Image (cartoon, rainbow, N blue to C red; front, side, top):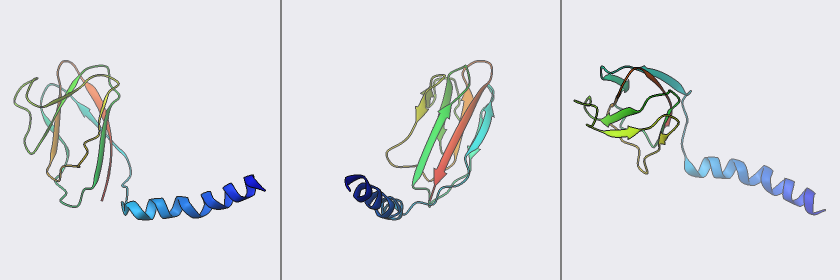
Length: 110
């Protein structure tokens, strides 16, 4: 009986939790970064959620609003690390690899 009740609660509560957050997620994306700065995401004033995951083997630098001018101008994300800001920025997201190349995977939502 407890399992049945728990299952019924999960069926009803899970959709409410998704609806309560009121976020629509886009398809995840990937960006390949080199030592030349490039734009990862365009500006989006409705963005409520953002996570960037460095799946490459080199550290990357992330900056919002403008391209990073150097390998220390922005937020470093080491290989295997991620950046999930408490409040997602609405301006453009730029990135560059500190050395070589690296890959960023991202998920955003409005």
